[in-house]
Image 1: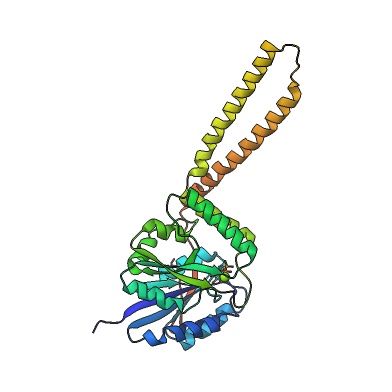
Image 2: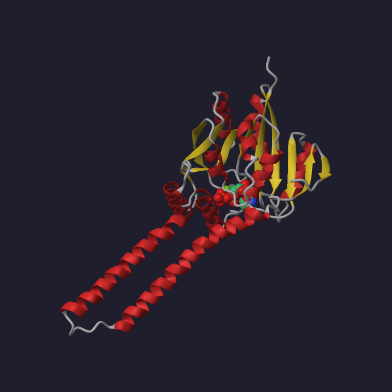
Length: 322
Ligand code: UDP
Ligand code: MG
């Protein structure tokens, strides 16, 4: 008889007061039949919620000794919350799941089954999703662009809903970059990876914690973190522009040589060229700026987040360790 294998769930929580109880109850029900063979634990990371989420989680930890609550000192964002959860979880496998019931808890069983087959990363791939047309369209465009530009293959239609074996989690813990795009990092790390298909549900209660602003930032993290194509575009555009001005020179020379009586309206040409070059230069400076900005934040080497407290088995412990 083997000792039970340990499986931890990581739930990032940002203003999910309407979902926490249902989520915990559902996950508990789903995994209950497996509880002989596995030892389950649940890590809830409160990402600076402004509603009653933290109180609900604290109550949950008081009732259920398998629950650990990590309270971040402010809203650090979804990817940081998941990172904090991965750093806290102590198990043979970790399942990352959204807390709004969009990732159906029963799919966790399929993830575990694939893990038992020997896979180290089992990501849940959306066969369908019940999001707004806008969200679906932007997500689609993003993944198409990302896969064209990125240096690693990032599976389409996946979120962070996935199971990671302990060895993948240990590797992931070594990646301390601040602008984090976890699903890219997981692809980058490798190991044996596979997918499980599922239908993504609608958010149960509350509103999305990903307004457009955060979505754009997230998309930028994905692209800038895994591609240097935007940098290469500078030189490509440079070549294009020089050949354009070369063609312009040929045209002016041609007019002077073969049709000296035709006047070239000099000021119009100049103005257009000036605006065009000015614009291109600004865009390119912006591209440079994004990379420089990333270098800067990385060089600062700050810890990724600060934990205000960790509550486990009903006991609160103050800590400032990452
Ligand atoms: N989330 C978080 N911090 C944030 C935003 C979101 O921890 O700043 C959590 C949120 O509670 C949820 C998950 O990340 O569990 C996914 O967020 P959400 O459902 O709002 O995103 P969407 O599904 O709309 O992309
Ligand atoms: Mg959601």
